[in-house]
Amino acid sequence: MDAAVTHWINAAAGISTLLDRTMIAISQIGVPLMVIAVALQWWSRADRNHVRYACLSAGLSFLLGLGINQVILLFVHRIRPYDAGVTHLLIAPSADWSFPSDHATASMAIVAAFAMQALPRRTLALFAMALLICWSRLHIGIHYAGDVLGGAATGLIAALAVRLGYRENSRLDALVTKIL
Image (tube, rainbow, N blue to C red):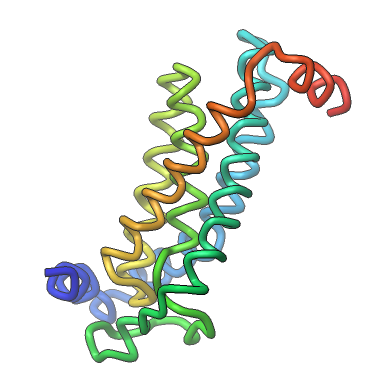
């Protein structure tokens, strides 16, 4: 089923040059744009301290999620879908294993961190960006759908861990916010 869904989404690759270029661009610059969008929230005027806490939580979730992925990669060696003949690759091949998707982890960690802070409009905008990033990874043929779902789960787990370990209005929060 994973290969079938992946193949179905990737089937649109190569049909439209404009679509392919758009998906490649989203895949390449989507996560950095999300990071910039989070960083710009630092200067929000509405509920400033709470939004800053959400920004810091998102950054910590992002980093923790990618760290968890590195541990997973030590144990899970899934070949890329283009190596298995499931997808048509639109970009240069990747040198690492396919599972989990770092792009999905990073983007969904940011979304989950903002969602846990009850910031619905910001969460919705970030979620739309994350969905585009995840879809682009499938369209360009670099990941299986399961890799993206696994990455999203890793991002969520990282955000939950940060939520449990890093409290708003704690001494650590006040110190970090003051430094930044």
